Length: 459
Image 1 (cartoon, rainbow, N blue to C red):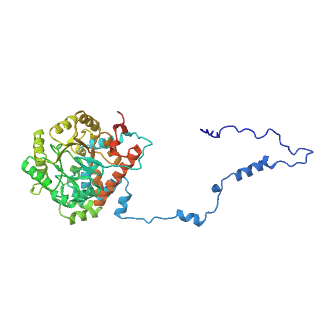
Image 2: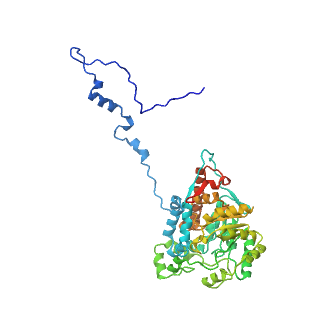
Image 3: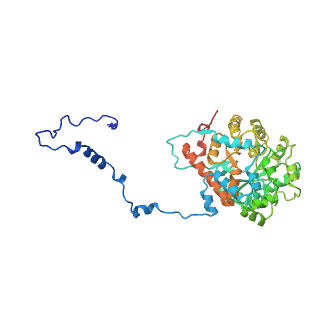
């Protein structure tokens, strides 16, 4: 039998308890006035109605003691890193600890930096659409990418001159990735060699990023070294026909390695730890390019080959026997073409906004590429980078069709903030963000994410 419980209505007019007129102390009765109906009686009732917890009293020490537990202040770098709860906070720490030239090299983009701003705004201009009443007591962020498992749906993108940002450089990045169970990508422009990175993270999943040289023998040497060192994926970057106009670097007079000008010496006075580390470790070199002895300008001019065509991609596919990914895809047609020429995956990327300003935004391109691959029945992996600054950004990308993501600046901010520990913290922040976002969306594993979970505002 179902019982219906009628709720009390506090706004209803209460029924009178009695219609009898009480006796009053009129003439001849000798009765005293009823105290309950006098003004003083009303005050007494109001006073007695105040809950005991709201009555004023002198506090006892035993009551105050639990509220007066002062935490001992901690000023160590480790404590500061743990207090950082966002990638933006790591960026603030990085800016305080790093000289302007290397910080701006990381933080900046090409020309007016419009592309970078738009890429970050693209992740802000979305609406998550959560499901409710789902069991999200356990969240699984693991995935498979290019034939092997990754504990998280994010890897470390290739970044050049990494030991310039902080002396631990590629060693910190590769070891943090190994510990987190995610891929690490070493750049051709890296400051640690293919062999040294493999030795530093022997159990990690190491990928190698390649710029195809005009001199094919030089490219072939790097490819063979990458294979010998155990790299299972080759990532060829194709959006660098020429170098972008990175105006912050021009204004800072940035050189590699940084030159000790009057400006840099003054800058060093505010960041002594960076300069101490820089001057007491092995000088920066392009460690993967052991035979190169020219200037940085000559190196870039020889590395960024403006004559590359799809035929060069065919040559690379025949040469490299592992997984091949093409980075720098910015149109649907090019995504389809590189897959037709043998690529196992594409990285939707505009080079972090560092090449062509006002370039397409990878996050906006993502749904179109995903739809095109489904139409073609292609199983090529879709990887996305540029603009990612939180785990929520990563989840949004996965929901709209990405198989995997890469972070460059996000991990470099951690590196500059605290070396290896800072990279660990950046990964922890992203993982915590992803776990919380998944739970709030009502999904417990990545395969449950769909485009219905995200709406791009204004579309």
